[in-house]
Length: 181
Image (cartoon, rainbow, N blue to C red; front, side, top):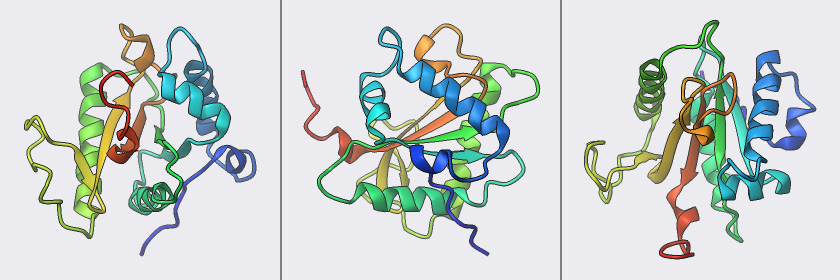
């Protein structure tokens, strides 16, 4: 059975029942992203414009994530191009874990999505993550995928609060930003 999508925008966050930990995590994320001296330029610009999308991932049930990611990718195909990102908040651990734990969790999520993907891996993208041209793919789309974790204390831009936050950005949003752009 395919679960419903939990693709959220700023408006739906306030209108649908969500786990209480998500609301705390989103508030922490928003505060971090809007700091001029710390955050990613694109995130700081996109958050106030409502261009980012969000979801949540309870430890016990990842089943909605493939449908949520698929719906997000459909949204990114709309024109004009909006440089959207999907940020998935993972249910916080009872006690903060070491960085290696979050790294493994991130790769487990990507592997889960890979096993749930109906489409073939694109021929233009190497399948081995060690390859310099590799990127995660889903629904035949290349994605820039990354995780920010509470254990990341040395890089301020990688600690966004109590939750690990997994980001997905279609690589097409980076077109035109090469070089000095």
